[in-house]
Image 1 (tube, one colour):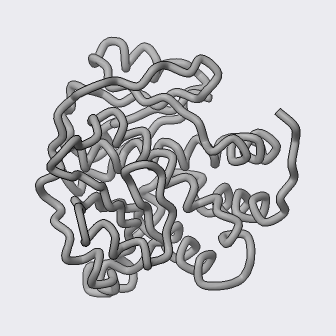
Image 2 (cartoon, helix red, strand yellow; image 1 turned 90 degrees about the vertical axis):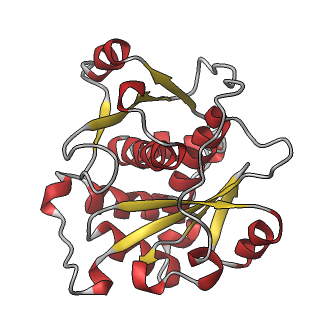
Length: 242
């Protein structure tokens, strides 16, 4: 792969590294201050006819989330960078919602990145989520397992702990968190090449024993959940391996 240097992606990567490194407990939010409760919204396209498989959605969500973080617009002054910076400064939440038909079409007018069946949006305070997104249902994102995408032996792996029995929406959020933490853990040259290739990756949900073996590897980047929904605080929900 030829090396292409994009100074805006490099700047976006520096922001990600500087603001996300460290324990999530060091970041804070105040329920009495709506501006401090920030989230990246994820819209999942789930048509009634021929919906995507669960594995496809998780992979799309992981790629879309990191693509928002490393979008060239995050590397220059303006709305996109400011939105990410505010989000990085607080607890890093993601909210997955179901969309279909006109609702799916409508959200494409809002700032974000679409990968396959998932559109990830520039983060915002939860009190300021645009109406076209806010009206989408958070519940109802259950997806049949369906087909598992072929393994790309040269792409990073995101593994999720299947024993936690996360909903598809929760798992999509965790996969997205794993992809951005992987980017934060890697050097800029690697991230530039990954971005150039379109952020290829593999996602696998696996039994607890297999997940624990991968999580024990020194190069594994772990996602430890804050425990807002579905799982206990501090649970390792996902890991990423380059």
